[in-house]
Image (cartoon, helix red, strand yellow):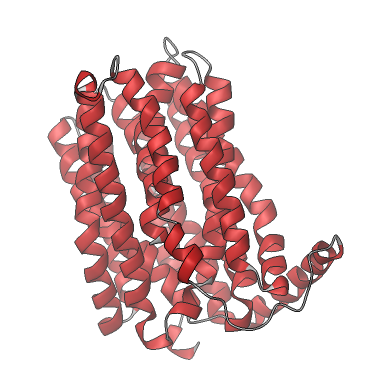
Length: 403
């Protein structure tokens, strides 16, 4: 249910209305390549904060035995910052980028501890299906709230709103409410095993730093986990960049904003059954085979996306992304969960999320910088192809059956 809760932020804020509103409302009159660079910079700075914090926070959470508590702390921070977007006036792009970056820190930080709970709520045999079920419900929940937000933006007067801008601003508040309400099942029913012998003091952070080095050495001894993290670092960079920059890219090509949001809706509702199917595929043929299947789809999407001319092609690409996105995320999470010590999941998932977010620093900056330097947004998306190819080649060296 936490996937259902926070996927509204991923769908409506990260992938949908924020990049649209950022370009057309908070950056009104600014050249498209400049607003794209600003959006990429905001994404990259938020990712940098997570890179710096994730391993320490994971170590502290494991030491205290309070993964769920840390999850809720970051979620609350993200919820408050998301609400703040409602109050940002037209043209205030810097304030919008600042609040967005902080909300992204809350969202990404909470996911470190959410992912670390996976081995506690699923046995090894069913971990692929469990992980995929979470992502599947996330696509469905995010898609339902996105549908409501789209209807509000198309027919604002029917909802008692002044115009489309007011509808989009209200959607940020709805995301925060949705995120809060559907986090309640996790708060009430998910339990962490074991006692919590350590109290919260300033000393726990020094312990956290000490355990980082221990975990780094252990990861390097766990050969499969180490190589997998390097592969994941590359290919998830491309995945996250497409999620965060797709709407901005479509706007740069001159596509209609309503059509782009519809494409996002296609991705959401395609992702719901596709993630479940990838979970079944991973259980039968192994998560590595499922990840390669998804990478193949992403490489085709990248090449086609660089050449597309018509908005209907964007819809087809949205469908293809929906087929692969949930699968590659779910199977990556479950494959890594098999390779790490159960008692130190937050520490190890801290590094997992650190590399994912470190990749997200480079991807949006790469796409925005290449587009700005060439004056052609198509050149930016082509640059992502090397990330999928490089990640796939590195993944060849991973032997999950030996984990």
